[in-house]
Image 1 (cartoon, rainbow, N blue to C red):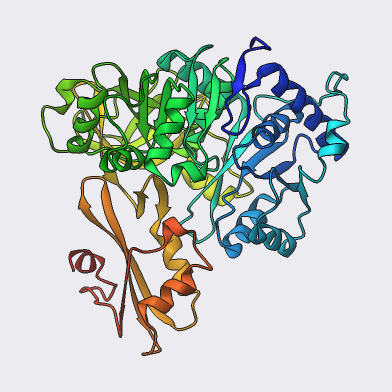
Image 2: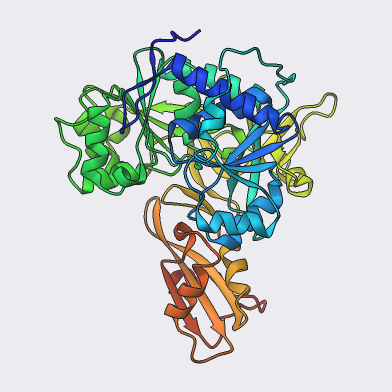
Length: 498
């Protein structure tokens, strides 16, 4: 039970918001949602800018039993339409004036949009102490839906249950020793999987959550200054952000003075770069490399980095061992691989998600019965990640498909190809990922067109209406035709080597 007077949110533009103040605001929003018949079986799409209203809206949805999904409103209108068409929300709820692209997308699929600012007087008039006739919410009900890139061209909405979230909180709280007195930096975008850790582990452990806004994340010095001023004790981000802060010399021996634990995950952290961070903070901070697919509630392994791990400057740090509330298999098809061999990591346990929201076909492909037992139901998620177990730890080797991690984002190269193929002047396309160094590369689109006047600049401009910024190719190569291999298929290996 959290202390009502303890700080829950440390916002940059006002005094701390206590747990008591946050609870009162959540109760008013809960009344308001119930009046609009939002409850179990419904979903609310959120435009969330890391404000008091934004965090309270997430908590109010949990109380009424409605799943929520946080939207990246910088997505182009076309992609927002696809997301809203998949999840069919009861309403789109905005903590700030609705983004133009979101308003237009919601109109395209006939979803009502409500701004909490416009309803502020009505919400504030509700009695936060009045009894709530809350619906019954079970552990099997979805708590949130997190959208990721989809190989069919349509983003996938990963549904995670209340039971999975509670299990995750209990595990993470124990591993990272989070509790009252801690201040967790919310550097991760709220629509990004890593933010699940920030939000749930902080607010369900009695810690304080300190949001870092887009305006601060846009400048290295401002990001670090915000962390220091908020007296953050725990940081979690993708390695790319930490590498950026190091490159810009924003991280020094006198910065992050209150931080006791630095967690990174979502992509590999090259040891050469990680050693610089360890040299700076390893003597006074715990550094953890974490791993976990969106489909399994954010994180399922945590490995504490030691000086021994960095003696060899090449490669990536281990993933460690899968959390003790999971079980896992390394499979080649449906067969267990021998010790030390590479296999696909398959996860089982209470943090495995429900599946893909309103998408039974793709759910059946990735979430399935454990092939090694037929006597009792045992649900398993195939991650697609190829790993090897050595010396008691798992090590990432690669992917079995065209999914990549780019700047921390999980991207299906096929989704980029689908978008390019929608342009009427495109004849053929192949998108490849050319690795520059460990855990870093460039997305390169090779495009054959029917119009010799088409340039890479025009292609990029047209793609901005179809793809989010982080999925735009780093380079576009326009040609008359793409090279073929002996089977008559596009020679992707040749394109990667070009």
